[in-house]
Figure 1 (tube, rainbow, N blue to C red):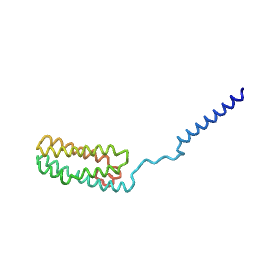
Figure 2: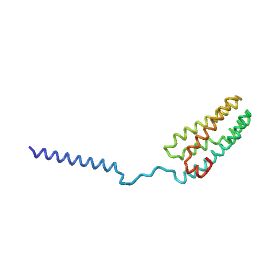
Figure 3: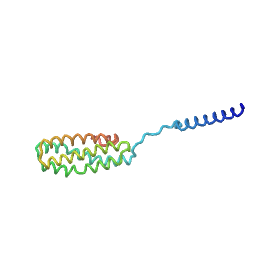
Length: 161
């Protein structure tokens, strides 16, 4: 009667040891730390090129501020639809090359900036001075917020952000 019990206990012990070893080996990476995800040099070069266009649009903010302060409705809209019109496309291309974990925040900030530009354009179209000023402040702020999502390598390469 003792022998069947010993046999069952041995099998149970072997099964338990196999289970412990399996879990231990699965949890251990063999001392090899996984590298953090990073952008390829090609991605950095592409993002840098696109960021130049984004920064060119941002560089028009002082001119836009002057037009807003003067309540120059026509030239405010011309600037938005001229030199600044490609900023949405530039951000879209940048966002496609960012790390997957960074994309949701970048997409959110890009949408906020595009919405702010559309609202600024609408305020100029309707010739609403107070709204124009408020919307300009939002545009300027959103340019700064989006620039923060650019990878450090790009910021270093451009030395403007």
